Image 1 (cartoon, one colour):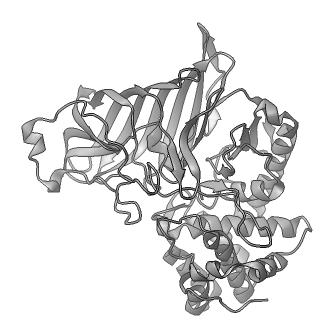
Image 2 (image 1 turned 45 degrees about the horizontal axis):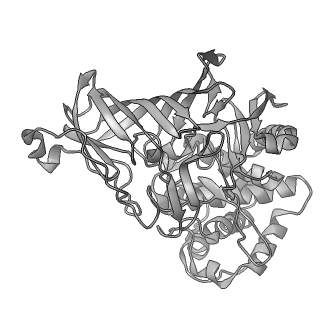
Length: 483
């Protein structure tokens, strides 16, 4: 899923490690504050028909203002400098994309900041600002590859008081920044097509004061370089990633690196307050990642690990390659949850937010599988505990179609996990676990829907499963127990 909120889900004390909010500027204010117009478009551009203007939303009815139409991003190159004392962030975002229609203008999502210049294919482009939309005027033919560069600076303004997560996005801290962006907080620190249906690779060139560590997704491209009291870190995520998983977490960190027993590079970092948990974070992240490769198939990325920061977020988020834990030492269950997301949510990403259970239900069930593996109770026992202690509300909220104002409801996690156990019980382990591996293999680095999963489950099992999925995912009633 995205950032996992550590919240009490059920009377029995069940918790999850993932949650977010519902809008780029908070679930209750999707439009965001209006920024000043930086450059007026020519009159001809302003009169262009809608047929050649990219839409201001990607087409997700849950978040109609998120993402943009008319193009697909292939790569982001972010060259940014951050000063923790002044909370000033500035630099440039260079975006490689391909037009999916003839365009006279297109939009990027960006909240706040002052935009000083925009170029398209190296030439200055006119632009305007309205709310969280940066509109760029440029004539592009259908299918054309293009490069847009945006220079900008200012003080990041994270989402505050969201109904699900409290705060998310780029959150300044005393020694740096805590950056977790699900569902739509990427726009609080870089211009983007901020929706999970448009995945891209990333390069991060991050400059911070000497003594501060800058952590991003992927792997370090060389040794950090220090000059004139500033250190520059270059990170590269060469596998496709959704924008909400991108991070630029900075601060004072202790770092441990190495390889898992299975040969996967590991990067673990903790704020000095949590220094005693560094080795545990490293060891558990390595061991759990290795185990998930035996259950879910090959690890989809080039490194694993985790970050514990001293910011009391109350949740964790499965940032690609490096889950981040906000102000607490994670236990094995939460680490298992966040690392399962590297397959379910990160490699396989949802196409629309209504299918969020494909992230959170799978990661919750992974917690139960980890408990089973460790001899701490079977998945059947976890299912029975959840079934017995679940409140009435969980049965009124079918997880197969999430609610835009309550994305990270307990039902999406727990009842989503129950649906998978019901499926496992119905078709048996000899079909269920091969189904998981085929699901992750066939859709590696892609976007998925609930309908695709149901179709694959029926093909592999040879059974008609409408009644099972209707009961567990789509009906507002308590299904019969299983097992």
